Length: 77
Image 1: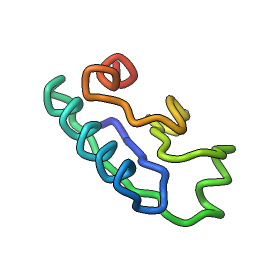
Image 2: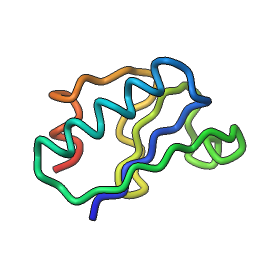
Image 3: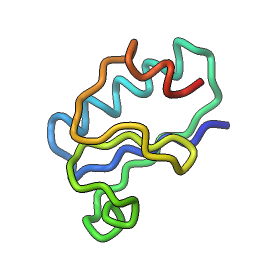
């Protein structure tokens, strides 16, 4: 099961990234869990300075960008 974490304080871009990541995972037919990380100290533990950020299985894949589902799919593979 893929663990997908969305790092951000809950802004519109963070919410959209969550929806896009879920869409990408569903299109790929993956078993996944999405976790939102909204607390600044927790976000900083990942070394992320700009949100939204996408973390897959503990690895930061993107930060400071709103990715479309098509951009997310290769990051989940």
